[in-house]
Each structure stands twice: as structure tokens, then as C-alpha cells.
Image (tube, rainbow, N blue to C red):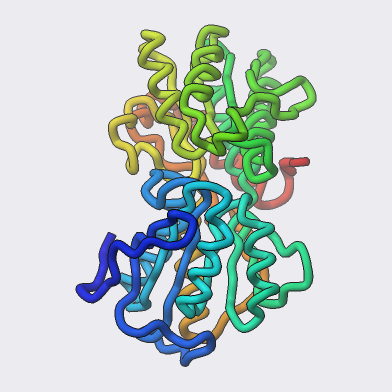
Length: 357
């Protein structure tokens, strides 16, 4: 990450949370001018690091992009447990941040409470929503079922066993939307080709059933590995872990199984790029393009002012989509690639409706 020479370093926040990048100079007032040089953009992570190669890192990338391109100052507080959420948010208020991002579904209640308690500050909830009467809270949400549908169709077409697997890090809508879309896309391939496709981790109605330990909150490495190993033993050759950085556990399970054909899909970022050691196992990634959304909010807020209207990332506005196929590009037929392009157009037009719930 890029920091300025006067960046504050090594500050430890309440709740054992570290500031990973701090702005220089005096912190701005709650409602300073909108000049970029005096604008401070801040973020509080979900449990985990801003270097998780997944969700938190993708969101924080928007702050670093704004720092580099717009000259704004940035601060980030990493949450190591749910108990860190409230003190981290308060630390950002105390720092007089101009806009404060809460990264992840788990921060919905804390950031709604913080917004109500601090009406002169601007807050953004990523993967969240407004639960009460806060007038200073902007939701950033994503239709991840859309891109996951494409991933499910691709996986079914690529698979030789026609057995796929998917699991989540938590049983929450921000996770199950991926899994439900994936299941529907796989079953669409099955319908188109008259061949059954099994999606382990989902029941016959398309409900997600396989999750790692919720207490670990995307940190259950052994659970993720055990689930993946079970999928592989049951014949799965494509696995879709919707569990942040736990894709590494799936990769480990594949390696230990001795399989030379099994692959997995990433989520949130292009895992083949952010974790290149796995590039020969990553069929594609279902991207939640948070970096650009966060950057856009900061750019607007620092120039024309903060806007609480909701942002919805879709295939149409490029808020979500599949990564390049990388090492697997030559292994995916031209017909399957063309079909994925066609399906994307049909989802955008409304001809195909991917359902969640």
C-alpha cells in the first residue's frame, strides 16, 4: 500500500485493532470543505485483514486508489473480532473522517447504530442496508447471483464428472446469493444439455446447506478443508467456496487429494491474480468489484458531496462479473464462452431472472 511520508503508523485502536493506513496532517472537521487535500476517507474491516486477498482487501483497494489518484487521505481499522466493530467505528468518528465505510454484512447493526449516533458524519455500509432512520448512511449492495449464475453454467460445462460443490463461510444473504445463483446456472446447463448436474452443498430446492463454523466467521480453515475433501471424495471436480480467503483451504484439499483435474472458483477478486500460486487451479473468479464502487463514492463525496442513494452492483453496470479464464482459457470451448456471453446479455435484459431468498 502507498502511504505518505507523514502517514501515522503503528497506532493501535481500541479493541486491539490496527490502523493500517493513516492520513497525514491534522484530521479534518466533521464537515470540512470538499477539497481532496483535506478529505479523509476511512474504513473498518469485517473480521480479518485488509490483506485477505478477498473481500476486505477489495474494499480497501478503493481507498488506496482514491489516495493515489485523488490525493485524499485514508485510514483503515482492522477488526479481529466482532467486539472490535463498535470501537473501530468510534475511532473513525474520533478521527473526524469525512466518510466511513463498514466492510461486510456483519457490520450492518454497528454501522447503523453509529450513523444514528453521529448524524453529522457520513457512513457507507458495504453489503449492508439501512435498518432504521439514519439519513447519513449509504448502502453498497451487489447482485452476486447474476455473475454466480454464469459461473454455475461455466462450471457445469467444464466439469467432466458433472458433480460440483459449493460452500459458504456464513449462512447470510451476502453469501447465499452466490450459492443460489451458482446452483441455478448449473441446472440451466443441465436443462440445455439433457444431462443431470449435481451441486453438492445445495439441496434439491436450491437452498444452500453447507457452511463452515459460524463461530470462526470466515476463519474455519480446517472446516473448509474438510468440506472440500468431502466434495472431492464424492466426485466433485469443480468447487465454489464462498468464504473469503478460505479458498486456500480448498486448494490444499485438492492438492492433498492427488487430483490433477479438480479446480475451484474464487470470489470477490480475481484470485488467479491476487494469489498467483493458485492460478493453475482457478477456473475463474466471481468478482464483487468493490474497489471501483468505493473509489466512486469517495470521488463524489470529496468533490460534489455525499449522496445516500443506494448503489447496486450488477452485470449491467460492471459492478460484478467473471474474471478472465487465465490458465483455463484454452480449455474452455468457444461455444461455451459464447453461451456465457449470451447468458449475460439475457440476464441484463431481464430475459433470465436469477432468484434469491
